[in-house]
Figure (cartoon, rainbow, N blue to C red):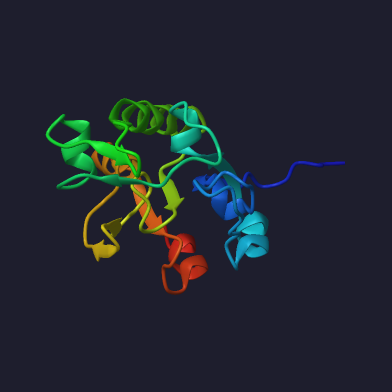
Length: 162
């Protein structure tokens, strides 16, 4: 009897989207299509901020100027609300996320929008939403991983096309 199941496509996903308490404020925010995502894909959780050595809960953080690529290249910093420079934590977490994606052969990621780590199309700075990428999103994008925002319209269909 053949008990083999077709292998599900591995997809890196922001851990907070799985409903785990890893957000900066320690709260949950599971993705509304989580059950469908679990059914269709092998979800590989990654929380770049925790993997970079930050605790939960933690003060909120923002990219000081520019975007995630600027942080990766040392032209900008990530500061928490008390002024601590967390840039190295964010770079370390981005690198760990990339290594995890490579280890699991993920060519796709679903990330939490507006995060200084995971923002795919937007980050928040001084309570304003900016059309920029977070640190981890910038690194994954640069390394050829296809990025989807958790707010993507028709996420399941778009994931299935790739």
